[in-house]
Structures are given as C-alpha cells and as structure tokens.
Length: 318
Image (tube, rainbow, N blue to C red):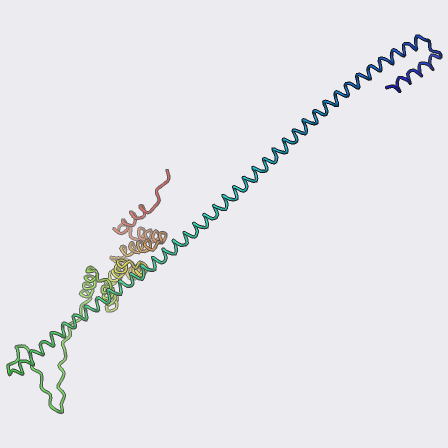
C-alpha cells in the first residue's frame, strides 16, 4: 500500500510539474486516510486470524470426536464379531453333538432290530425243539406201553398162566435158528387235508416252530395242491407272529408267487405290507398296498389297505 502511495505521489509531481502546497497538503491527507484504512485492514486481519484459530480448534475437536466415535464403532464391531463367532462355535458344537446322538440312536435301533431278529429265530427254534420233544415223548410212551405189555406177558409165562386175550406169545428160539421178527404195524400216512389241519392246529396252539415244519412238510409232499397257497401264507403268519418280519415278508411273497389268484393272496399282500412297515420301510409297504387295491379292489384286504393308507398319510396343513 505504501508503494502505491509513493507511486501516486511521484506521478502527481511529474504530471503537474511543480506541485503546489495545496496539492502536497491533499496528498498528505490522502496518505493519512490510506494509513487509517491499512490499520483497519490489519485489525480485521488479526480478527480473522483469531477466528481462524478458533475454527481450527473446533475442527480439531470435531476430528478428535470422529476418531473416538470411529474407535468406539470399531470396538463394538469387534465385540459383535467375537460374539457371533462364539455363537457360531456353540451352534456348530450343538450340531456335532446332535449328529453324534443321532448316530448313537441309529446304532441302538440297529442293535435292537438285530436282537429282535435273533430272538424271533430263537423262538422259532424253541418251537421246533418243543415239537420234536413232544414227538419223542409220544414215542417213549409207546415204547413204555410195549415194554409193559411184554413184561406182563413174561410174568404170565413164568407163572404158567395163559396169555392175555389178543396177545400172541412169542416163538421161542432154537439154539441154531433166530426167532422171526414180527413186522410192527405202522400208522397210515396222513392225507393232505389231515396234515394241513394238524399244521393249522399247531399254529393256533402257539406251536409256531412245529406249525412251520408241518406246513413245509405239506408243501413238500403235496406240490400243486389247492391248499398250497394257503399253507405258504400260514408259514408267513407263523414268522410274523414270532416277530421275524424279514422271514415273514419272504414267505408272504412266496405265497403270492405260488398262487397269484389264490384265496389267501389278498391277505398275503396286505400282511406283506405290514411286514415292510414293521421293518420301517413305509414306502415299500405303500407300494404293496397300492398293488393290492389295484389287483383285488373288492377284497376285504384291499379295504383294510385303504384304511391303513389313510391313517398313515399326513394330515393336510390348514
């Protein structure tokens, strides 16, 4: 600003030539005003500097607040991540524990099924042994009767008494000739119907093993008989009653194959589905019952299959 004043002064002196005292005085007055303006500008500049420092302090405070807020937010985010990681770890541990429990339950179910199968086999074997024991007891009683009769006859001979009516005294052997053997009369063989009836009676008396043996004997001795499909069905029934569902399913299927249109075929198909259901194979049971309804729609077994399918189907959601 001072340079500008001097320049104006010199220009005025050069342009006017010789300045008058009045001009010099005017220039001095103008110089004084300029100085006053410079002072005012300096004062305003100082005030601006003070305001700028205050603004800078405010900006610094705001920056500090932003930094603190950012650190707090980072801390919260870190805590949230750590909390989520902990929750995730607990969930994964729970899932792993659940999988372990499910595996243990599956193992127990398999062991229980195997135990039931072995138990059913043992029951069947016990039934067979019981039937064999009863047969042996009958033979023993027959032998005891024969021995008793011979003893009575010997006693009569020793006492010199006549033999009892109906008893032929044995021929005494000579030293060189063996006594002839009298052939023992054998019971007449059972007819197919008698053998089938005896097997059914054993089944109804709970002698499942003997019933299975009798039905198998019937099928072996009378192949192609009209009661063959029924005999095969009752074999499946015996295994089912013994809770040997796997063998029961096999025998029911044999009954269907042996007599596809037989009297017991619808019942065999229905019980085949029950055997599959007992083995926890509901899809296979549903397939078998659908076949039963299609092939024997008017049968009582088909009606039972319809009822069972309705009860097994899940209720519709509201």
